[in-house]
Image (tube, rainbow, N blue to C red; front, side, top):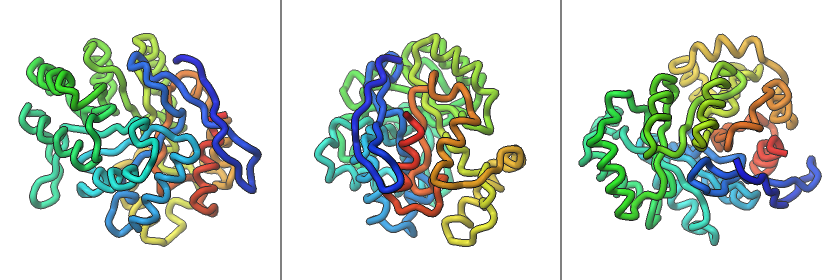
Length: 313
């Protein structure tokens, strides 16, 4: 994992001076923050204020976050260009590790399609470069492939794109453990993003196995969508209703599991998650909570980010 070097990044009224810690991202040798920001979901929706979305990204960067995760199909295709506009004004833009995804595209009707053809992947990369306003994508992840999609033709296409300098590192985003096992046999991939959180303790053995292969391990849904809080279905703001509906549609099993972990969502909630989730920080490279729906629901935006980054120390 490399040396975990702290950087003093700020203080807030409810906290002492705190530090962001950094780790090596597997064999990429990239040095990244232990907390990343997921720029997707409601954050990317047009109904969510662009100014607030950009302010969240800037607040995260000010507090030492260097990893930002998005996808070309997220939020109806709006998340990726929104992130590009957000980081355009940052002085350290080219020092950030921005991750996006290929393999999922939006049809004319807004429906999602999987497309692993070489032409589609190349177009996806070119579109992402334009949306993110980058010369090269630091980390390109394949978005939910099946084993049969990881063909020699696809791998050759990805390596050619990498040789052209359009992407720097390759990874896979999958919550399918047989796929993750297969990815460990493919040297082209340097990172894996899986769903690991307080509701998914069964992921621990495969995480240890990935660490043995020196893969960078990214925890998606790191705060379990806040499902372990008591208030998932008790708030009626537009954002809350959107997340509740998505959880019921896509993560019904997690909603049921969460009943065993429901505890108060306060400013200390991040630390509560950590104390109830042994083994999380020593192995993973970083966690990627969604940026506009942190556990702490009552804090101002900068304080929310402080609450989340404080779990890393």
